[in-house]
Length: 459
Image (cartoon, rainbow, N blue to C red; front, side):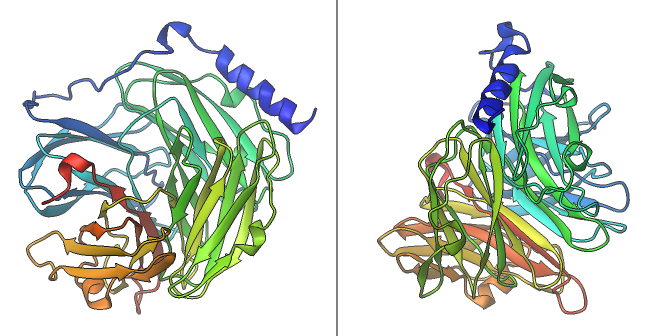
């Protein structure tokens, strides 16, 4: 069977299962305990952070950039009953880290906010034989189709998983299709019609299904209900951890993936979930240089495939990736100075962002990468949240370039959230940091910024 026929068969199979009565139903979070007034505004964040069986630590990173106090309610999901709900307040202009359970690969958390918009991400540190740090923003929306480019089962030391969470009060039914470099799309019984009970999450281990593949990307389709999905990548016994939220629906045709403070080695996993070859291209934006991503030159990934393209960079460098098809998605996998890795998705430029930290503790070498893929300069003001925050700074990001925030500012805000607002132009930021060990290079993590909705941009 040709690859395009396999993809078509997979899509038909996914659409055929489940109950049609739920296809268009929007499921809202069930109240989690004591009622909280919602006279102003409210929303939710969904965080498929994962975890491990021994010594893992995970924290939700919650930032309130506004002028009003926010009330949040949190709970953590797993295979069994969810944790009890915890209600907290987050004062204006502050940032907090809240510990959450991380004792299993499938662990995920949800945060509801009331009265004042907050941004939420996660940061996790592996324990036992699984070292490293991973950081990522949470998802503001659940949905019925997720694309996850970043996964591998190349060796037995790889223990990559897909984390799928159902944060709602009714069952969800999901089916998963795995795409790789050398095989037809994998559609198996164990990946079809997976029932997720209310407030539950599940981890799907890639090595249990597809072995020996450098790239294993995934399509997660919910035929009943809505879910959130992400990847957790691990290399046992050295190699670190990384995490990446999936793309909900179709990614933009052009995305920017910021990077910096790394060893200069980058992999770009690219998935084509459609039924036709799609031309893709990318350029590397450095501080003063722009060059074609040579590994992607004249590339058109075949339908139903996942491919990984390597690149070598020098200094802070971002990737501008473009594809003419809506079923193509890419994630950036960056390697730190030691053996740890970080993964980030890409995004379209915007004028206001909230950047959560990627450093887990001291000593550290924190960085904030600012990428400007546009034709006009971006004048970006960085304001850290917290009573001991450094003074705000303004950074000029030239067109088609990547710069790092000033070192003094980044060090002062190493474990704080940062509001980044452009007075002119647009940009894409990411937190990129090494931390821990004797010299602060033992772990590495990268986290894409979180766009601030127009109504909540600080004045």
